[in-house]
Image (cartoon, rainbow, N blue to C red; front, side):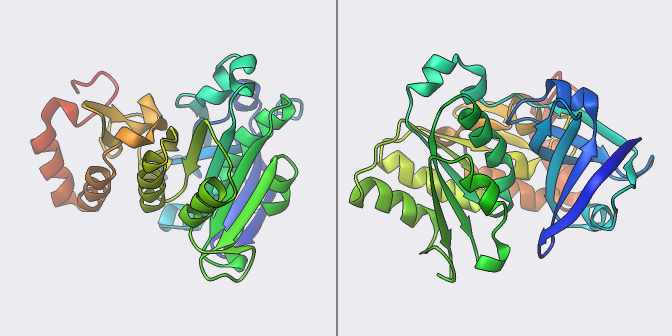
Length: 292
């Protein structure tokens, strides 16, 4: 059992929990995720790692209530436990696995949308701890839905907050801030990392492609099973079939087929749709060995 040491609501329907999970904390890196289950027969829920403390043996997760499983999770309190807390899973961010000298030579921009701020934070924190400054754009629909602002401010080189309704910080979508920074304020970046809703990442990539700015995206929003066996996170990247949970979750955003991925997500929500996809995609429907 994995004890919850802290549980709090960050904003409406978004929760943070600090979990005692020493083995995960000992080996995880920014960009990876865990799979949690509240009890033996409950739904498996993949969640990206928001933070970790190797000395204390804790892992921090942030999640949004989107269904029955996460609704039940949100009702857990300090002192309760998860039945399973499996990880670290997925491939760590290239920024933290590359030589520090290589990463430090780059001018880096992070773009976080909504709950996507949570997986951006550990990457920016890791860079900060290694003496590397990165600019960060954090966007939310309203001021009330903004999360982890103080935490991000403490590790970012420059933090730019924007709200869709203009209720706090800059006004407008994250794409407007990118355009303002590059075209109006003369900023130059070597790489952009964008994490948030699929539609946000799609339009960030559309803009950064025009700006000749290489962009990495995290496809954690489309993961379901977390092992590649369910086929939910199958995505075309360039001319290859990939699975977000086993090959990613990070990919070159300029060659991700976002339209296909979002259409698949709609189909995958129904039993009929899942059967249709499995029949259509054959051996490429699943990940792992690729022939299950």
